[in-house]
Amino acid sequence: NAGVTQTPKFRVLKTGQSMTLLCAQDMNHEYMYWYRQDPGMGLRLIHYSVGEGTTAKGEVPDGYNVSRLKKQNFLLGLESAAPSQTSVYFCASTLRPLSGSSYNEQFFGPGTRLTVL
Amino acid sequence: KQEVTQIPAALSVPEGENLVLNCSFTDSAIYNLQWFRQDPGKGLTSLLLIQSSQREQTSGRLNASLDKSSGRSTLYIAASQPGDSATYLCAVNIQGGSEKLVFGKGTKLTVNP
Image (tube, rainbow over all chains, first blue to last red; front, side, top):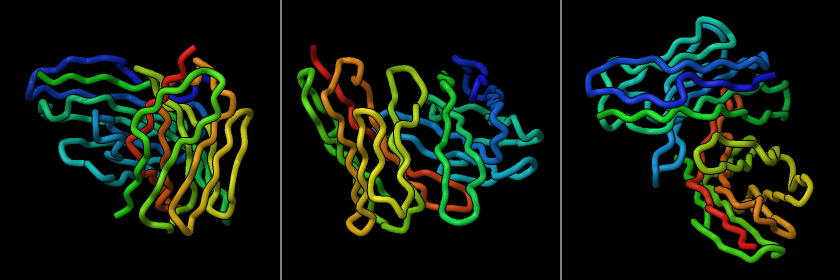
């Protein structure tokens, strides 16, 4: 299994440009997440999805859109990039928890380092 | 709003020392707590997950404890090695239906040979 993969690994954008980050997982996980990691701020949740065709906002969703058209893929879009979106972006996935009290670990991708000039 | 704090922010120890990393959270209504390791320029690797009903979990030289009522968790690393040098993050699961995690800012550990 490749686990969670992210494309691209690095990207430099100019202010106002758009791009899409791709996350793919081959573990048949129902739940997927996009986080950003900034110095001094820790990891913050941008958007998440609990199943194919469903998405929801996290803690810092402004300026981002997401889509989950296939169970194995979760796309993060920046329509008009801003310097404040310079960050390292991580995707993660996990299984739907079993009924009762069993919850599962999240698996993370290697990250995408984005710089917006 | 749930807040997760990790103390200390950085720690430097000599090889072979036993050490404890601390994590505290403000709201005890959590579903589980997870400890991660992050190497420079890399993603996060899950080390241990403690369900809310559990008190501790062990994996090799690592032992994590959870005291929900006091809002605390510790990660104990025995006989530290230079290869343990990394940033250690704790995260709490705040919503069982979506598995949303709230992260601390991490403790950067350096183990000196």
